[in-house]
Amino acid sequence: MQHKVELEELTPEAFAPYGKVIDLPAGAPSKSGEGWDCWSYIQMLEAEVPIGFGLVVTREREPVVAAMERHVSREELLLTFDREIIQPVACCADIDDPDESPDPLTTKCFRIKPGQAIVIGKGVWHSPAYSAEGEARYMFGIEKKQDKFGDEMIHPWVDFKNKDTVRFG
Image (tube, rainbow, N blue to C red):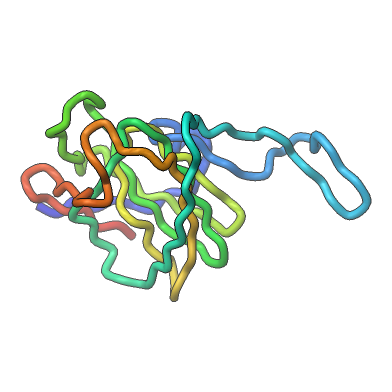
């Protein structure tokens, strides 16, 4: 079965079940100088070991998600550089269940604009981001350690329950 999901704007409230949003705050900067403003510690990333960073180039493709991955032992930072991306996420039902599959009924797809970032919570299901238009680049950061249920470098993708898919847009 294919489930239809509308795109959502990224807000801290809407994204809360999946993690944290990093965006310019409405309040005054914590520091500033001639020609610059700085908001310190607007969000935190939990880390016990060094954080590894990677880059992804994502291109326009069919807006259908069939599988996702999750990291039950670590959060993941995701920051888009040059273009808007769409990030599909799904709730984790049981972070201690190594056989869990992502649930299409809890899937949401968020628009992330250049300059915005997210911290995907531990256990939250996610697919690679999609470009909203053309080719987009984004960076991810995650603790460089093996996850509780194995190494995501081997085969991280888990199909949705019942081999369902999610179409967004």
